[in-house]
Image (tube, rainbow, N blue to C red; front, side, top):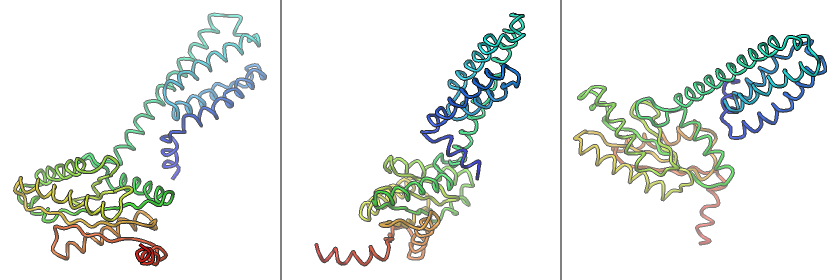
Length: 300
């Protein structure tokens, strides 16, 4: 839970600004405290904590700046308080030079860890085979869409897509042939959807699509077009694969991500049971919206 909160905080667009707003007064407090105590308590480790925090949330340039500021502050404090070390200038400046090297090393290391951490988190949200989002990436994007819907009340649609007879491809061509087909499906879907849409591989031969700001007619039109394009490409490769697509159109905010996926998945299974290779949709709405719809239709 803490790791997830840290991840979300570190990738927030406001994180660098907030981190600097917090870091600057803390840094000023450390400098003031060290000046008042005249080096007696030793605040080197506290400077390191500031550099670590700034490096994590703001990146290497800011961490480097705070490393130099820390060294400069300690030099000036030593000179103003007439530290015994100042009596030997060579020792004094070498000592502070070593501190600077240590601070810069910490800034560099935390920037590397930050980069690797972000890369690992990004990779964890994408399917290694197709390069499109996986179940985790899909769930996160769907959460964003649900929140957006609650704010602006625009409908959205989620389509659940299953490859009919995919096992026959695996049996005939092996897993390499099946993998090539999955890549083709992902690339074709991505090329035939809007930039704002999200196509994800949920696992095996099952895919899902998020269509933001999309109502009933537009969702059906988009998914029928996608199914026809996919079938056309697959037929050119002489594969016995077709596509069953269940589309949930949400006029009201659903309970949660799992409900949305289950809703679209159930519609897809209706397609499977009804002969496969077509698009079927259902509307999701609250009881209040459902009661209002006939009245609105009559008013028109």
